[in-house]
Image (cartoon, rainbow over all chains, first blue to last red; front, side, top):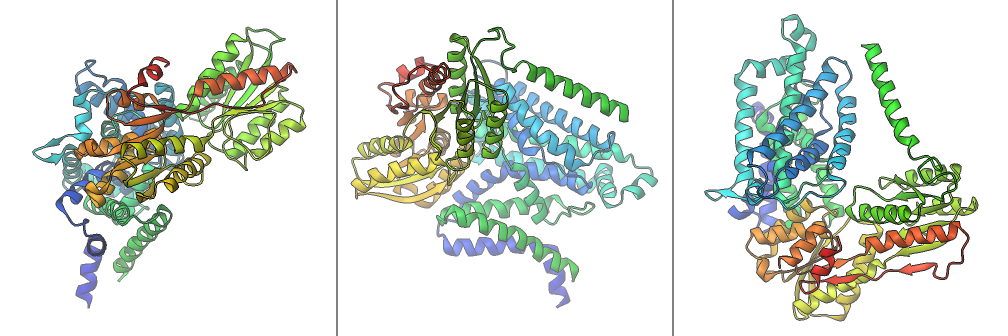
Length: 311
Length: 316
């Protein structure tokens, strides 16, 4: 019995994911095909990358509510510099990521130096970044983008869509940082017990700063991917993306009170959300019920995780 | 730290007040006697509404009138507050681009009670304003479906992408579409789902539908161009566009270009410029107490296909 509980606690989310997949493949005959799996992976790559970034912030005891707006802002920035024949591809890509990093620096600076709660700072940034996106674009979508730019979100390498490759690379890099570097250990330490971390000589401020820079920088990458996928920079894109990202993190077993969490858990969380979205569309379930089902699964997955961890 | 915070706050306040000073009626270049119109717009994050607003600003400028534009950010509550503040500022006329049928009605009632003429632009409220200029949204759904029916020879399977459920445009466009569908029993709706007016969501939904129904889909009707463009991109990625008809509504710049390039089969043009211009003209006439013959102006939608798209592209 104890063995089963230990297995459940370690692999609870993965078991939930498998259960949902099995159920969906029975109900929808075209769910479990290579094509559909590629579709799901491509659809979750943006949310997955955002979720990985915010995993760092949450493990270090913070939160970032500005992600969706940063996606819109950086998408507009990238699109503005991605018209055909204007600049080489690296320019919009770099500017978008730098804009993201800049937003993260402002967030991190006010949170660490100004000692304002991350919830409030990033809530303020959520509306500021959205406003900036609207100012830069005059409230209109920025379109007519170059083919090479649209390749980032729409193209594929050796049959694998580029967004999936990017998502995979980000996952690997993030997992390495979190599990095998000093910085990663500090992130856990700061989130687990800030006072103890400070007492043992960790520069708590710079660790927190790093998490916001990393998170917003990834949001910049996600902004490029979204603008490229829909071939426009949309100032009103990405609304509530932060909530899907945080949902993925929480489903994946990361504690909102900090100190606990894994990148792989977040990836599985993003997969669960993506699989549900896709599966319910395949089954043509009314969007009213879709919202209810999604909510139930989010809470259910976390409940399962908590119960098994308590045993 | 504390002083820096206060300084920052002060700077922010100073910046906002200096911005708002510019908008005070009667203090602009047009002088003290110019007519001031207050306008509360549904959402300046919507491209169509921004186009209406631009036309309004142009019309006001050429008539030497002051125009104060407020963004209600899709909140009827905020909209009512904005109208109240227009009344307090004693503007000469109010233009309302309603957020909601019911919940924006108090705005109309309050303006009428204060004796300030109020004009609704683009969509309706339950309370009857002094004048209205807009289009019949049902008509756009009808036009789109008639075009789809023609292109698929009056039989086949279609999928419908809806806007935010419960919003006036969604409700009316689907009514128009269903009216046409009732005429052609050989056209079947095999799936109907919201993509919340959003291009990325439209693309995701279409990918999932392609996976579900594959070549069983003959046409897509999207209630706005954003979702239509998303569907179009998903079909193109699956190399299916040549077999599936896509028609959507609004004639935004991207959609017009896509029609010109032969990618999108048709879009439906709603005339933002005439609506905005008409609203300002009505506001000026009512403010100056001139007789108004036509208190309800309906501006027809227009079908945009490859044949006539240039006319619409050049108008921008």
